[in-house]
Amino acid sequence: MSFGMTGSGDQVRATSTQDGGRNSSDGRHLRSERSRQKIVDALHSLICDGNFEPSQAEVAERAKVSFRTVSRHFEDMDTLYRHSMRQLQAELFDKFLVPFSASDWRGRLDEAIERRAVAYEVFRPFRVVVNLRKYRSEFMRHVSDDVLVFDVSVITAILPKEVQEDTALTYALENALSFESWLRLRDSRNLSEEQVVAVLKRTANSLLSSVECK
Image 1: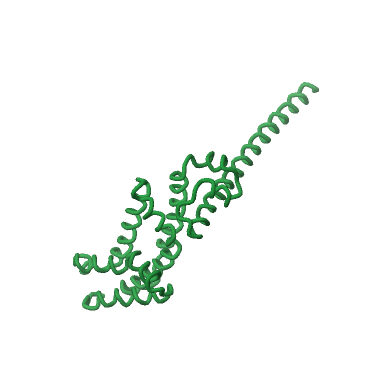
Image 2: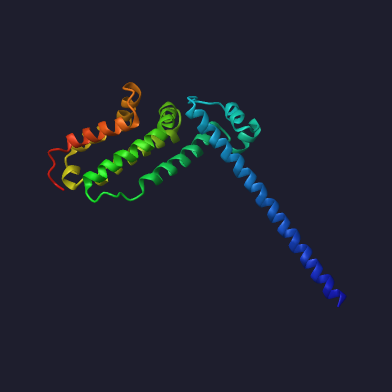
């Protein structure tokens, strides 16, 4: 009887030890993930403040962690940028995957222009970083290419076949609705986000005015 009791106690203690070890491991993992996210958030914060090429030391100071902690999570700044950009891309791309409410392609194009304006506003400082680093980082070159392909594909997918087959017209639309056009209107012309959206819609409608398909 006592042997059974002892065996049962050993099993309880063993299980308790295993659970304690698992809980401890889970706690360390959560703390590590929180530190990692603090570092990414610090990089985003610095970039949004206009520091487009912050150092690891500056990131550590903004995140309120040690330089060693930053280095432990991200071996260099390129690794940190890679993680940061992937996270940002996922967040922005999700916004474009929401179904359009308009039933016709012209209405969906207007919605796409509005969504791009929101995404461009968020991505604006990070696009500067991409342009600064893409000649030094293969990953940043891929980010730049991916953003361009995604930008073009969102618009092209909306257009009727007749427009897609008109190469000059589709390139004109791509150029008119590009991030560079949006940025020029925002920065050089000092237009508000709403004003830029109105200009881009007007431009798209003018380019497509001769298209009769519905």
